[in-house]
Image 1 (tube, one colour):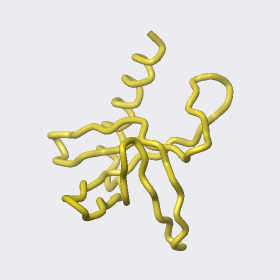
Image 2: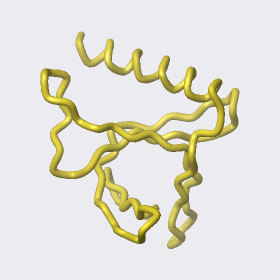
Image 3: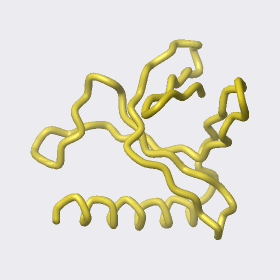
Image 4: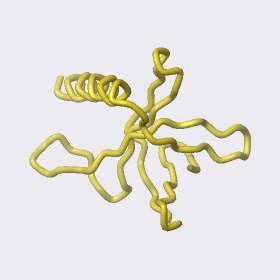
Length: 95
């Protein structure tokens, strides 16, 4: 994972790179991890009828010139916590 101001480059399992925009990041003290919500550049993030595929991963930030690393979500408990954070984010966006 590479990142700039609000973008990251995600490399899939086939080695293909895709530029994504960071929607938001947060840290969980319960799991001791940082998480990032992101979506492909070119897709518009809207709360209306059009669906935008939002991705979420745990991540380890890079230091200095080093790239960070995206990690898979490992447990049902993590997914439940992430869903709560997402619902809170969406509720705040509606206000």
